[in-house]
Length: 184
Image (tube, rainbow, N blue to C red):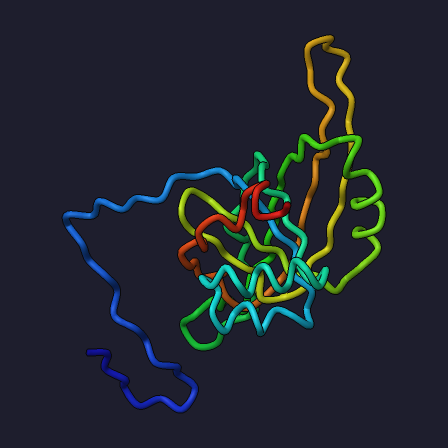
């Protein structure tokens, strides 16, 4: 049970989990992404593992899904403020950057040219079995670099940035949501 020592500025500190037999290690890579309109984020967050909510958002064009990506998430750079007393600084939030590649180069040109102009979308990204959603709307910067290598692929190279107070907490990815079949 968590113990809260009285301090009017202190939030409850939750107990850490210790599992010496940990067998559900999550593997990396941003494997899929979704953009969730800010008007629909609370609906998804009410039950993020419910595929029906994702389908409703997709049908209403309040969610866009790119089911097959290759990417990374930097985990956040801390934003610090001046500390007081013996504390030199304090963490007040994070600046996050996620980068992903979308292989649907020709087909998604109009999508990226239109979505980059909006500041109304939250970023969801899936690793092996878990998904996270940004707490704040994101900025989306698509690029389409072309290498001189004859065997290279031309893909969308997308950078997503946002800032918020806390780390995005993962939830179990709803079954089938991040697939081409779900989009059909």
